[in-house]
Image (cartoon, rainbow, N blue to C red; front, side, top):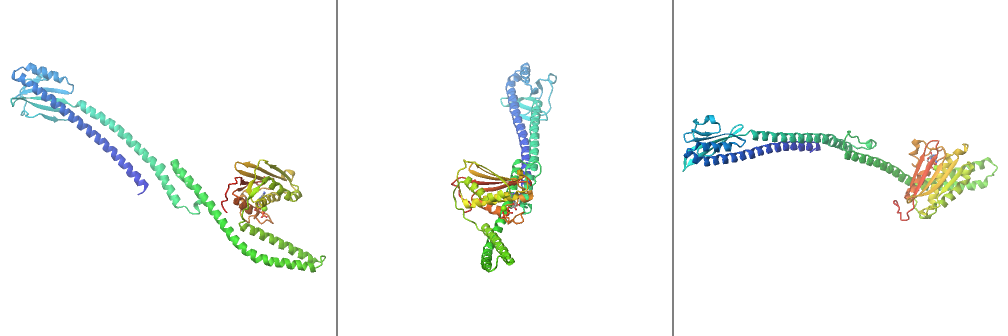
Length: 465
Ligand SMILES: Nc1ncnc2c1ncn2[C@@H]1O[C@H](COP(=O)(O)OP(=O)(O)OP(=O)(O)O)[C@@H](O)[C@H]1O
Ligand SMILES: [Mg+2]
């Protein structure tokens, strides 16, 4: 059964219950009051009949009158009559009817008769078993009716508010709970790979809990999308790995043979001849092809991480020394700001050095040597941030366009004429294998900042290996 129907049934039952409660209380109160009045009336009439017996047989009518007058002081008595066996009025609180004859038979038993707003109680007066008269008391029910009306008003007042609150709560439930839940359910059931981008839409005013669930689902969707993209990249990489292995096998050997043959040929050709020039071109192109194959293989092969304690600052300095001829050639000013407090961390020095070379070469390549001095800067920093070593490589080069920034870690993404687009992909892979992260921030014309974060904790266990 749908939640909406359940909520409707719940409120219908609640409404019915409230009305039944009201009817029950009013009926119950009426019954209690009636029985109380009946008891009281019977008691008063029977007592009066008892004490009236002597004055009747002794003809002491003034005593009778005194008795009924003292009883009538009770506020709810309208009038009292005492009649003899002929139904002649002997005493009556209404003086005018004294001596009159009432019609109808005398009562043998005490009777109580309710009329609209009065209660008539009649009680027999007996002498040695014979009926010698009747007592008749008429009680007014005005006070009782007034009380009942007040109770009814109070009950109605509460019933009105109970129903009002129930209706308001019903409206709240419908618009803030049931409807948004319906929307959430239909959108979650209809999630497709195309709709992963679209956030869940809920009607305004839904309860914060449902909004939070929708936000959590949106987050899950974006994580799923990210995971999907990662799977696609990983699958592509795995396929490439297999292709690479075959390529390496199929191309390397002929390349070796070509290279060897060129080498032999070069011994037999005079260096002065133009053909020797062609041989050099062939040798260079073979080297380029070999480099390409090397890169391809390295990316697709999952190199194991050979951890040793590494002094990052020394590694940075030695890498910069290695690249010095390259950046010096482009008149790049290189600065370092290395924290001496940075502890050694468990890493594969060879692999991290490759990462640093890739990143620094990118920076050097991004800098235009004909630019002014402010645009020929390279800064390398190291520091500790909690349990991580942070290495930042900052350049004042051309920067990266926003649409390209999201792709720079993808294998074979390059904006360079001679780039293979594998440098950052390999670097990212190496840093991930070390349990760290690689990030890049850049804007066109504003330079780029690459941040490498590596865990310092020696207890760190590698997730992938
Ligand atoms: N510091 C940087 N400044 C500007 N662009 C950069 C920088 N670092 C990376 N890029 C951009 O990211 C792309 C990918 O870089 P990556 O190092 O992966 O490949 P590549 O440098 O093109 O080729 P290679 O495989 O030879 O390194 C580059 O082509 C370039 O567009
Ligand atoms: Mg590069």
